Image (cartoon, rainbow, N blue to C red):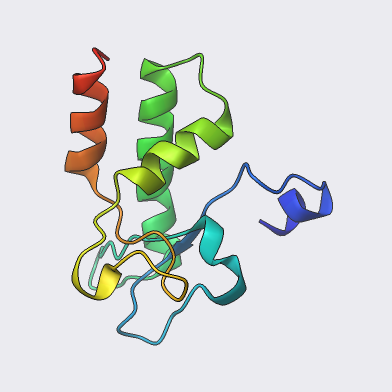
Length: 111
């Protein structure tokens, strides 16, 4: 993210957060933020959520190779679960990564 900002690339990155329970909030990066509270070996957080988001970004890109990185991020953001504590808002970013929503989006468009 910092490298993207240093290169003045403001739309081609996603900030991945673990969840809201641990006090993690997107704050000033809310316009590029999504929660992905993935657990592995009883651990969670951005180190575990980021590979999950990266997987879905690469899956979208592989099926729709004509998209640019911002389009891929937009699909991830638009298909996110925005219910309960993950409601899309000025405080909480775009919600919770939704793999089922991403798959449905791709299928609906024939990919």
